[in-house]
Each structure stands twice: as C-alpha cells, then as structure tokens.
Image 1: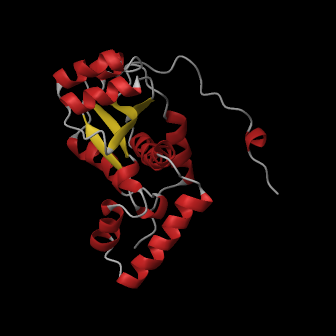
Image 2: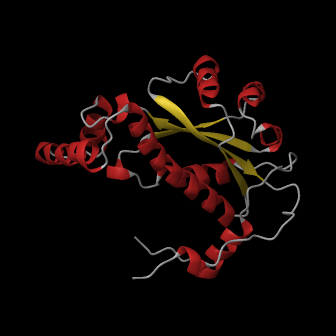
Image 3: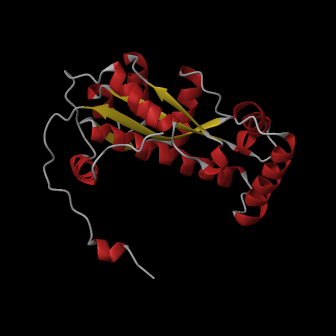
Length: 224
C-alpha cells in the first residue's frame, strides 16, 4: 500500500480551519461522495481490540430532525441548517461483554480468526475487562465503548476539514429523553445502543468571530 501523499502543512491548515460551526449555510449541501468519504473514515477508525462498538445514523429526514430539537438543546440551529446530521451510537454492555454473541461473531465472522486465536483473544479481552480496566458494570462498559466511538468522531471532523467541510460535535442533549426518542421514532434498540454524541456537517454561514486560541503547547506536553 502506498504511503498517503499529504503534507504536514496541509494537515495543520485543516486543523486551523476546523472550528465548532454554530450555524451552517443551509443553501449549500455536502455531496454524497464527500459525505461517504467522511463516513468511510469512521468506518476505518481504530477501536480497542478492533471490535468497532459503534453505529452511525445519518438523519436527513426533516420530521426526524424536528423531533430531535426538544431533547437536544445544543442542536436546533444545526438541525435546521446542517447539510448532514449524524448520531454517534455506542454499544451497551450486552453487546460488548467479553463472551457476548457480538464479540464472538466479530472474531469468527469478521476477523475470521482460527479457533486457537479466538481462545487467546477471548482470554486477553476478559482480563482487560475484569482486571485491567475493571469494567464491572453496564455504565463502565458503555463509557468504554463511547471512548472508541469518539475516535471515529475525531477522524470524521478532521477528514471533513481536510476537504473544506465544516462540522460541529454536539453533547448538548438529554440522554434519557434522546434515547427514548431514538427507540420510539428511529427504530434503535436502546438495550443494545446508547447515544454518545451528535455531529453536524456542512458549510459555515459566517467566519468564526474569534481567532482559534489554545494554551501553549509546552503547558500540555511533557517530555521525559
């Protein structure tokens, strides 16, 4: 496989370009090809043990977007103006437990691992859950899965910025009410999946009001 031919300057420029877009230009739409490219970077994102504990819903239906507004205080303007609106779902405990049907299927059917490797993998994964990270309850397992799903979010936002598309990550929602809505209106099995975040994609209506500000790099990085 060839090494990607992209300059460091282009990557940094994309990070400088990216900002949490509060309002999008509703007249501009992201092409299907570009949105599929962004989603493919989520698809190819890394996850712990490679188990991909996520699902992404692209909400384009206007009635469903309207239904989200009362349970997502951070989203109404984005729901009205974003070209594409994504819900990032993470798997709950029944799906990610070391001996679940899903995990077994990932190893057998997706990764197509030999039986002896599956046995070894299962041992490592069980020890990781029970000893190393102490994932001994449903909330801890969901939080762990959410961490993986956030990797995909970062990759989607970065890949969007690299091709000049804006984005905004959204955590401003009432989780219980949002998940009840997903169960009732979106056909989501909320025994298996929970909502980790929302994300809007499109083209900015206006340039940011303030320049990007960050702490000094020396304040956040320690070399030993």
